[in-house]
Image 1: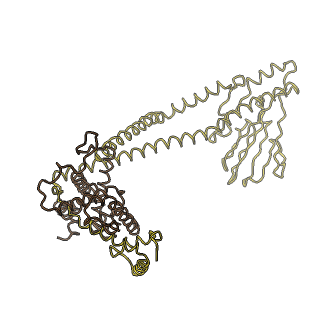
Image 2 (image 1 turned 180 degrees about the vertical axis):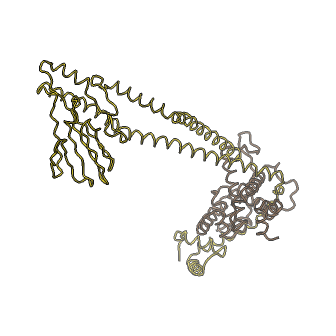
Image 3 (image 1 turned 90 degrees about the vertical axis):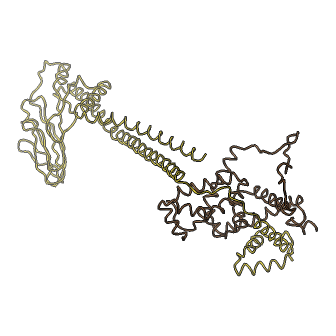
Length: 335
Length: 203
């Protein structure tokens, strides 16, 4: 005999299902067994049967009218149903376009910043190194009283190795089928007879060995060892020339290399006198100058940037406007 | 004409076929709406909204029981209407005492020509049942109305509420227990013949 508190939710669920003849055979057996054990459950069963009878006996309500649609109502329903999704989709597409445009801009800017940073670092490093090198050379001048010597180093991909022009640093050109061709010229800038003092070095075709060649009977250093020997200066500085004058002379004549153009290997692309070595302000002016040169060279880029900026804001405005219309239509349709 | 053929025509845009389907199910739809909303006017509005909504969504009908699909739209329309009413509560048009208390079952609402006492008692029982239905949660109310009042099977109800049959059984069991408890409390207002648990009370 089950007490009332021993009737479980499972019993009540079986009881409910039994009213609708929705018990499986196993459930029927289980429920009959529980029913036989519990008078409380039997009483519940009777009560629920009574409830079900009362509910099913409720009279049906009479329809106040027919709910069929007229042609006009149907057209209105379709029209209303057409506009809301249209604006919804349009706003979604616009929002997507805005995301693409802004996302592209963010990605592009980040990528460009990452790419530009090493270049700027490299540029400043080059400038600093030139200054340091010059300072070092000046010290050497003061100490040794010798003329300054400039080392020109050009490099390029395999088969494109080239050096300084003939007579301008003793360049040696070697056609390589693969690997990297590396030419190093050591030249005395001030020397009028540059070809006599030049030294060249060329890799082999496979790029595995590096030879250092001297212009006159150059001995092969062998073993791939790289040795660079500055050429002897042939033009001695007069003894009466003071170090200050010598430095000024050097500043006036010695070039500084700012970049290497693969298409013009062996040629000095740009040079500036040392007294005009760029400070921070002049670096900025160089950047501005480069930018203005780029704009002058590619005016369509500047034009595209301007129109693109206008388009992205127009897209954003359109997305917001369409979304607002969609929201209004949705609220109206709900009310 | 077969229902499937009517549905096919309605999906293609045949308004007459669509209206034929509406005529078939509007009585069930309106009664379901009335039992959920407990108000004729609100039930009529919800049914009309459901019909319009169904006409718009015909393209999205993907087969299955059309009746269940329509009833689902009706119940959703009822829920929307109930939520709107919760946001904008209405003032009951019932007389109040001088103290502001609402007078229940006022004389001016009584049918001036009651034919039989039994009809009056049935009306009172119906009112008590409807009051108890109103006190149930929507999810319990929908299930018990569909099974016990509309006479739908568990599978159809599961299709309407988009839940497993087990959920329907569980909700129905709990709804019936809640209804029983509610009617027991209000049973004292009814004559003994109409009390659902008369034996229990007598004991």
